Length: 120
Image (cartoon, rainbow, N blue to C red):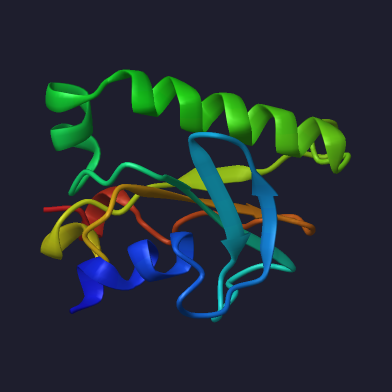
């Protein structure tokens, strides 16, 4: 089940290239990177998506973003910049239903390819 994938990574039951960890948050490289640096940040206590996290455990969002801040400063990503993305539910492109944030960096990132004409 895809929503168990990140729990297996947390428990070290399947391999992942972990780049950051503290008591509450784990970050690992995406296996299908969309940028030179593509890291997923997850909380060790799962929630399904951002909305559920905000309803049931809002402190998790702060803990994840604190970890992102610590990682980006330590890795020298703060000055050149980075992007944070969170897909939510099916229409948002979420495929693993464990709240997570994609950190993309390492090169100039283009726009989203959306224009007012195709946003209906």
